[in-house]
Length: 344
Image 1 (tube, rainbow, N blue to C red):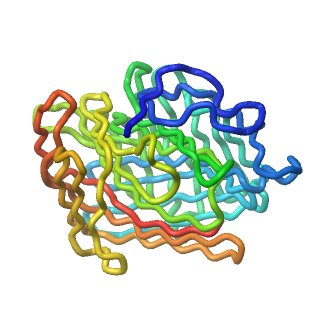
Image 2: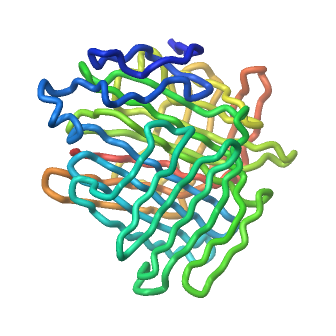
């Protein structure tokens, strides 16, 4: 069921149809969204295209995340941080009418994503072997303020989880997930400061582009860390929307290589998210439990746009088998798992 893409080319043809469907180890397709043909009148097409760059960073003490998103009707800028020691979680966001002032490059391997106004400044830049996150939000958390200058190391030979799938007719989803990005730099939150080092801090990227159905649902689970022998290890698991007959986004990331998994079941109690979650696959390669320690619930209701996400932070335990047959034991790997409902 898993179709691996190996040839570069455009994402869409001149009629707005996907040229290829499946998964890849590298971002092979040029995201030419200007060829999208969702509406007969192209003037209205940008209102249905969704684009986002979501970065997440785990340090020994905290989780930090920053996002620049253009959802067509509106832009969404948000930053949040979780203190693992105190359990304190704080999140703030900005809704930007029609996404004015948001710049997002066409592809995940190039350019600068940015937004700046009188409240916040976010800039994500891409170089050949690294990504830089520069965030400044002076009024964050009642004036405590948050600033970040973080470099994520991303050698071009490292593999990532890339997926292209259709969603009901001319809708589609093009996504890149990069796990296990060693992080270094500085993070300041109020009077607390952290110096990030690559051996103890890890980042990840969720880069998404596409046209969704107005009502959407998905599950996503992710983690990045190191095994006792020092090898980077990560998980990317997902399900919910779209036609997954050609490929899913499920993968073990081991030593910066993708080990593709097929279908994965999310076994959890919707509405009681602090109960243990269980992940298994249809090939007997994955058997993980996830024990949450923090519930991040984020709800946005702007009438035509609605979003509710329950992002659980916790620890993964269990076993996953690599493509070579090596049984990888996962113990106390900190990550997250989520349930997301959206009207957008």
